[in-house]
Image (cartoon, rainbow, N blue to C red):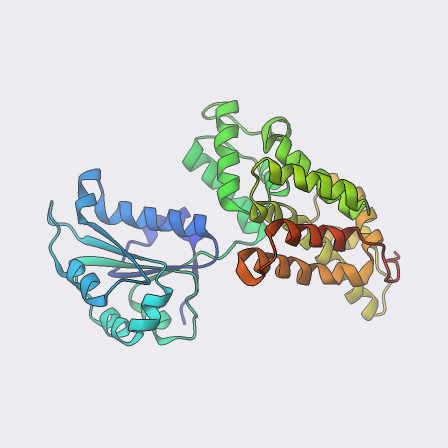
Length: 351
């Protein structure tokens, strides 16, 4: 099986991956899916006039015969190819999987079909067919290292500014791993520093996220310090200002996952018969140097058992905010805050 092509790698070298007759754009990061589809659209259609050759379909209602009719029709201008995009195509694929497998094997040369899906399992015949004969682009949330590298490239390409590695890391730490929010902050920072200028950590501290970013971190620090009333007060302030619950969770998740990873390192070290060092475990979990001391105190207070539970808590909160729970979003986030702030019952971390 061919190596999976991630959206960040695709966007960095689009000339290397020209559109094929069938393209699948899939994954849980909507910003990446949107950027990939925009790039394919630009490559296939070119100028604005060529939008007459673009057709979009709603996946839950689309009929395969209508999509194929668009693809088989010659482009209105310039003799180029037509582009048909099936949005939210998960149901469309379930309904027409066999027919789509046949189409990938013998597509129309006159058009490009883009399937925009959240889930595209690699063990299916359709995935394998598109990977072999078409273009399958994975838009899953990137790793922290890949994300910071992408930010530097994206800052220069989309906003005409320089973003050094230290600034990229700090921006991810402040905003969280939500690419859409990061892009918005880059746009704001670009206005502050001007074209072809460098975004410094100092400019990020002054501008990025405004009081909302500051309030989010105050909320998280209060929760991890055991001050639930203060944490909930800051949470309510964020929600009252219009901040989206899923964005709040995204912003704090990166820090909490690093604490969880450090707790796992501590347990693995003890299991191997060695004495753990909390500071070293945090460094292995990629906790930033400027917050190491604070993070060490927070992890000690959480303890190993609750530190390991962080992954489950974050996953549950994410699922609940996306519809798995009937609870209001405010209560879902308040529950997470209380879990973080509750008195520790587990044995303290030592090292």
